Structures are given as structure tokens and as C-alpha cells.
Image 1 (cartoon, rainbow, N blue to C red):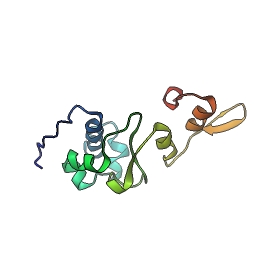
Image 2 (cartoon, rainbow, N blue to C red):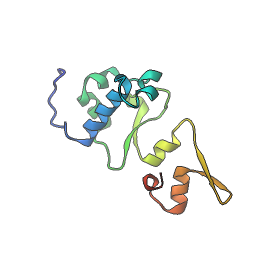
Image 3 (tube, one colour):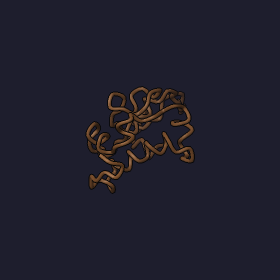
Image 4 (cartoon, rainbow, N blue to C red):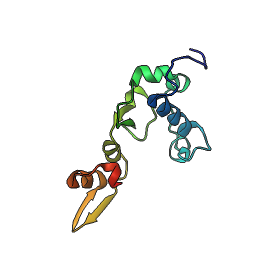
Length: 123
């Protein structure tokens, strides 16, 4: 498809996610570029040039999930991406932060589970 492909999904959450991936990988002015593009994280060439290629590989973004790289040292591609909850993404981080309370040290997702709270609320 051309640069101006028509897919009717411009106002969807999935399209917004695709746009954000491109920005953090390629826009040096994006706030997250330093953690992605500046570190060599990129998108599969077919995804970079076509939302439909991304959509055909990943489908609709499920509610309460966002794109997650399985290996955080690699870029965005069909083989390295999945839809994950915020808790799953936190557990996939290369560095886990532990929080101590009453002598118990747990990660934020584990505290949310233990306390019966939504991870995003606790965060």
C-alpha cells in the first residue's frame, strides 16, 4: 500500500498504539525516544511503513492491554511482540523494583495482587 493507505482505523486505539511505537522509535523529540530509538529499538520494516502490516500481525489491541516486547533488548516485530496487561509488562522489565512494607518486599504488581488493588491505581 502507499504511504497514504486507507484502512478506516485512524481513530482506533490500535492505530494510536502503532503511531506511538513509531514516535518513540524514530522521533528524536518524543519524550520516550531516549529509551527506545536512541538505544537502537526499531520497528519491523513492514510495520514501520504500513499500519495494515502491523494490524494483520497483531490484530485489535485488547481492552486493558498494550503492546509488549517479549525481549526488551529487541525491536518491535511479530516474533517479539504480544499484547500484555500492565502487570505483565512490569514483570517483563529488565530491572524489577521492590517495595518493602512491614518486613515484606514485593514488586508493585505483586503488591497489587496481594492487596486486591488494580495495578494502575496502586502505581
